[in-house]
Image 1 (cartoon, rainbow, N blue to C red):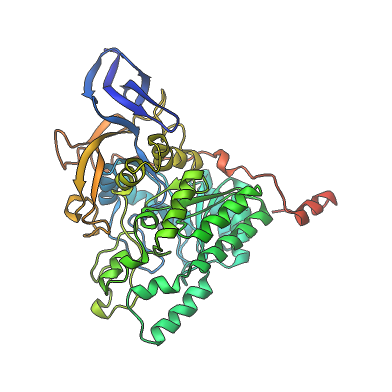
Image 2 (cartoon, rainbow, N blue to C red):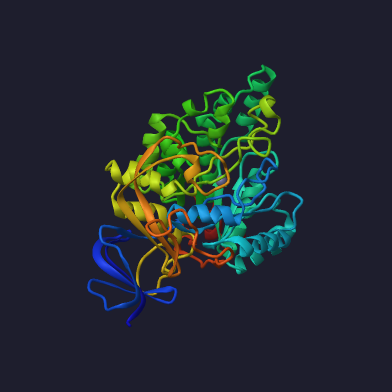
Length: 490
Ligand SMILES: [Zn+2]
């Protein structure tokens, strides 16, 4: 036998091309991709199926205490099971430092919990809420040394937000040691001031959430953090971009040579503020930033299409519609008290398949780039993850492009108890999903069953990627310092 496993007769789709080919797997790794491969110990008939790299979700919250101080509804088992059923085989959730937390303990805690429960491979980003001297000099460089090559910072939320000088400190550390900084960019003052006014006037229903998070608050913060990143000349990635103005600000910065990446999520392509405007139940659609309108959806599609937005992630932030999440004070809960976030790990790919590929907005190759390959490249997981080539991990999702699924919360494997996409009719679904050569999901033989063992997922130490390389484009004033022989010491 030439291979342990051969995926035979499918159409292999990568970010670059689509070809009729077999995939030969030895152990956990792809060994060959070509038509007419020799026999395997086992074979999977992929006739009529698309063979895609497993999705990489680089923005999801799992078993994490949020910026609101509430533990999310999924643990590392339910979240990674849900990911696998949706065709995602790598997740990069967050280890979250809260202000009083010691980072080494935070990391050890998340590592322990993930190692016990995850069924797919995972990396970590580190949320930095307290960049004090010890954090900057010791803890962040130590985290990077263990393969945690990205930080996330918040410009809003009382418990998490950093002011501009702290952001500059984190950016300088990221540049010095080789990490990418992800930014939740919203103007804290606008949100908080309007929020106080709304509550003061008795306007507490979920729909007022979308009023407080103005489009201008996103645009202002994106522009400001880009200006900060330019002082340090280090790359940043703006997460969950939701507005016309936000996409435009990133596009303009990229056009003048700034290295800034953008991300958007299903909620900004498929939901609008109207979804929130349905009384208390609107809470199920509340996330930050909030979904906007059709024109903003269109801007996000265009951003994905022209590369302004490099990646499409779930920002899975699952909270149940009960006292544990969305309704801590029952029916009296105001929009300021409910957990922010929507689930999306499992439906991220099927939604984009239907409304992107199926509707002719993007090609299959763009689908793979947006859901897997670019995540792996930017976050230092390529070529091991996000592609199908000799040497890459055999993380594959076999899609039936004709399979129709009516979305219903019952169908999904996360622990949120609802989905904002209930009632939609999707076409195209991952039917067989493999992680490192092992079949985790097989809807043709064992529908609905997770075949992978709890705890089989492995931690991925991430490499320094090209995305971390500074643009080498100092602003005038910093360039002048260098010309004087007194360069800026970061
Ligand atoms: Zn998030």
